[in-house]
Length: 132
Length: 412
Image (tube, rainbow over all chains, first blue to last red; front, top):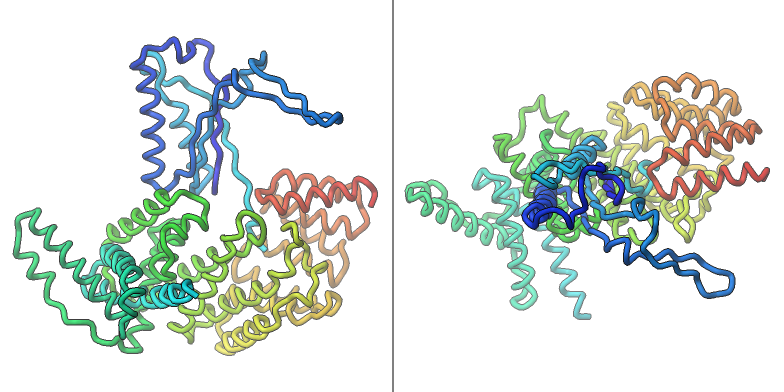
């Protein structure tokens, strides 16, 4: 079963400052934690993909327009907290295992080495029919 | 054609590899390390055979090269530990003798038993089987399951470690265990088949090869254990199901239900072969779930037009299958078949009894939707299709259910 674990900019408790206000060591520790988690998932045969997305500053909203040229809105956006920050795709034996990995992701350290408790959205990736 | 020769060698390698693996595993008593050594020998062969010509005895060649690697490994291991005496214990081996027929069949089963070890998760057993018995490369298996090669390599190596840690020797399990082990093997093959059969279009086309691999594995096991009725039953089931593949989806990959399929596209040769295999299996008098499923598929295969389908027979077969498996999903299919004989209300009555057992399952909703539609209750049918579409995890199925609901909501 494949799952996508998504994190947006809003799912962090209010008392956690933005990453740019952490100490460099805290930032490094956070990045190392994420890389180690990916390595652990690869080692267990569960890793598919993990990506961060560029900041909402660089995001664009595109809407088709009847006139032929699409309407493109550039960031930053007031609703940027709803935008996706990154994702992980995993291939696991059960939904329970997906939740376990999401919890590990949520425990990534922040200021003072404490888990930032990032909210992770867990979604199963749809596939072909399971039976015939 | 330049590709031709390589293709021939690839096929030869894939056929020789499991036999070589079994021989090396037997000789050294270590399945996991033998698998590594044979993989390396196969890489050597792929490099050397095209230039030097294929050896007279390809299996023997692989066994010798892999055995040398095993000895190297034991030596360096021993050197690392500084205990030269272990080398002597690993060393005595004779050049490969041609394998006897009886042993080949045993070896095949033994390999399958190791790959489908009860300590393994289904995903691990599938990966190990595809590599060690079907002879696929890690890259090919990774591509088939849409994961990175490194992830698949780890999955396989962990699977081998699990088998090794179980402490089971590379030897036939006791007679009383063999039935259970064979059931695991058949289940793994059937899972591989379903992975492949489920996909028939678009970006995931490569996965369709998994159905062919599963059929190939089914044939290998059937050759090794021709007297096991469920082995014949599974092979028959796969062939009879595969026969319908060309008619099962439209050009866009959308599902076409059985009664709307163009039956002239069904592969009559596969249906005939599956039917014959099923006949042989049933004649042995030990019915099981694969034979029953194959028997249902064979009934559909016999009907050149949907209205020729012998639904009473299918109702009876689903009844037996339900008894054998105790699976409530089977009851859903029985409800559909019953509706074909006695009308949609009879089917709906059967489904109402399943509510508690199945809970909020998409297939319960889609079946009820179908029967409600048959009964002329479009509004309730549309609501059930919508609920089924919300709960399914399959894209083509969701597309199908959504269209169905939309059509009913529009009054068409």
